[in-house]
Amino acid sequence: ELMDGEELGDQLVGARGRMQMLGELLRDPKRCTLILVTIPENMSVLETVRTLELLKGQGMPVTAVAVNMIQSPQPDCRFCHHRHESHMAQLERIRDLVGDVELLTIEQEIDEPRGRAALTGLSAKIWMDRERILRGEQSTGH
Image 1 (cartoon, rainbow, N blue to C red):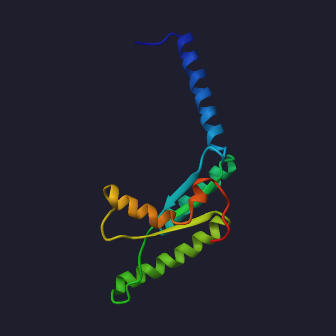
Image 2: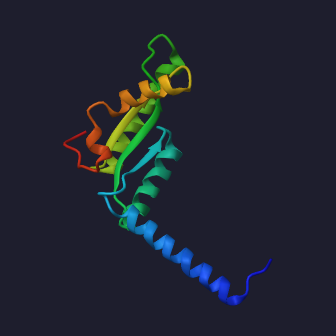
Image 3: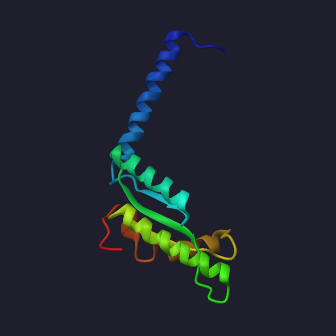
């Protein structure tokens, strides 16, 4: 059923108000924490930096950037070693590009974490001694 002009206008005004409230929420570091997640690959890094700049330009503070799926060192595997070196270079690049934004790193796991126990273990690795990030507190260093 089609809305008449007045009803459509009311819906649009309501949507605009909700979007304004969302924008206010995202700009309030006491009520919201923004954490970007990326992988250590060139295009993902570029997209993350672009998103970070866009959010900052809108007054939305990003508390941290999480870099996921980092290849662990594997000296006996030529491919893995090369991938690890590439990821370490991308990680340094990310550090330079994000400035004072906290950097969280997550090594690639053999299996994707599924289920409560696996996710709890991953969460402990990521957030150990970093609860301040969730509270929106500034980093004391990388």
